[in-house]
Amino acid sequence: MVGTEDLRILFDAVCNSLDFGSGFLDTEEVEALRRLAETLGVDPMVATPSEFRAQYAHDFEPCPPPPGPWRVSTMGGPIETDEAYAARVAAVIARCRHCGRAADERPHTLKEAA
Ligand SMILES: [Zn+2]
Figure (cartoon, rainbow, N blue to C red):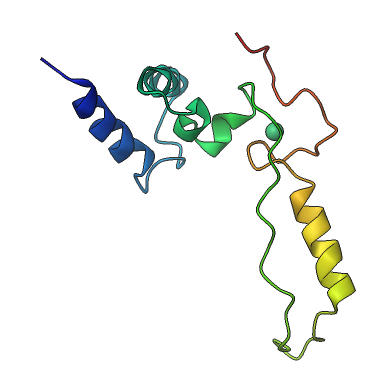
């Protein structure tokens, strides 16, 4: 008899695999993983590789801000100013971490939430 704990172990193994998001899962497998996530009480987006995320209903979540500002010149370039860094952060966090679209490009789905 397969228990919830076994399913959770396999779920985590797949979602944490280095191959996850490398195109190794097809749509049928992603659908199954998302159903499994719901069964396990996990956010289905966790089980959705990035190339599939735009297909599913999700709330806009900003991309994590980039590190910086650069205080040391690299490759002979200029040291990044606070203003330049702020502009870089603003450009990144304006994008959805799930689908890469801007916050005001609603809805963040290609199909309606069930
Ligand atoms: Zn999105």
